[in-house]
Image (cartoon, rainbow, N blue to C red; front, top):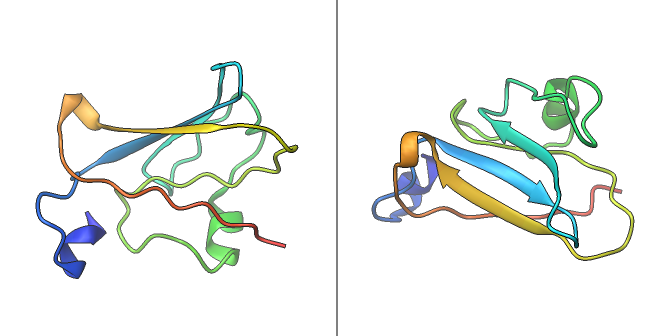
Length: 96
């Protein structure tokens, strides 16, 4: 949703985010960054970690994952809730 403030037309209104490992296995997911989905590599509430990172989304419908990943290949998949469509942006940061 925040993309609209930067002039991006038709931003995805409610994105969900999945993180897959190099074998295609789902290792983390999120819908609405202020609600942690426990499972895979996510073992605790992430809200405070996301806020402390300085990268917390401004819109509660945005998705975010913080993960400590070993070197390798990963795939991020963004989908719209209820199969909605629109433009999305995935960003990855090294938060050392």
